[in-house]
Length: 428
Image 1 (cartoon, helix red, strand yellow):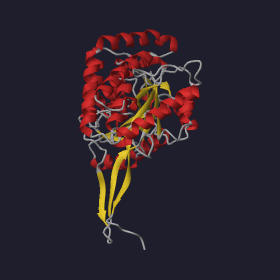
Image 2 (cartoon, rainbow, N blue to C red):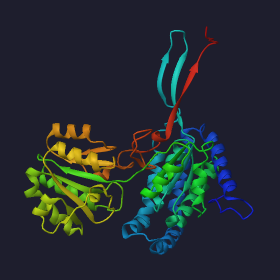
Image 3 (cartoon, rainbow, N blue to C red):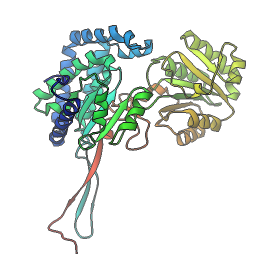
Image 4 (cartoon, helix red, strand yellow):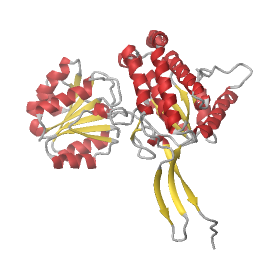
């Protein structure tokens, strides 16, 4: 069986969606007991199938890209949608990277023996069934399926219409590998229903779905948070900052800022805001402005920035909190490290924030006081990524504090249970 087909006229949407969720629940129960070696072998087989299906995947993607302008996608969004041979190889490599991770399921987190002889173990187990709703990026389809499967979870994938053909082809390859590996095929299901009401149907099924994970625009995430009857793990906006401290090396600061903003602008860990200590502003701002302008980036700034950069546009209050996902950056001059921290904590999205400094105490204070999922010290914000941080891949970067924070790999899709072993113990 490949992708889930749309419901027939004789089958109401609710019935169709519930059948998908029920199949996922049964698959999750079966998958929870499968050894890590078998799951890893399945993922390696999926990667091989993806590599062997490049022409068909690219043909499906071409259909999505051709339709993208009609959906109102921006150039940055189309770039995130576009696949080529190199990006398909990266998808396959990402699946293999997940397969190479150690299996978290069954890991003993804590173990103790009570005075009465009871052995108490706290053991890592899968969450169960994940409903993952996301937009526009085919690679996310494969990453999410791989991370869920490796952590013993069944996943229901509800991608956006913008990447429908690409996602369908990828899921067909993954499901074929799952089936041939003897794992429960329905541990990976793609909802191929265009009706947006389907999302609401799944969000109401707290009896079958354990967690909802939205990844996309603010409207999508707000809807999921509003309608979900199960816990939500949010991948919210990425208003990421680079702060250039008064003790920064300016060559390093320029390199990091340009990379953080320009290496790929349409992604959540790209820098959207630059903060510069006042002691360096007169020297650094003209220099970084020239580098960013050469990359086609427009600068919007505060009054101090405009004084030093006459071509900068006046920033509005909204600019400080905006995730541009394109060639614009907000720039502010701050009087101190604490001023930078206060600015980030007020306007940031708790995603990724970086400091460039040679002062170890400033770095320590920044990392401890900035309310962020990932604090970067002398490194680009672009490194907040599951693959780059050694997780293999991720299902998203959580900006929540519970249940997981930052890149969510296999361990972040687990919880735990207590297993207590006695020898006929009874309580008196």
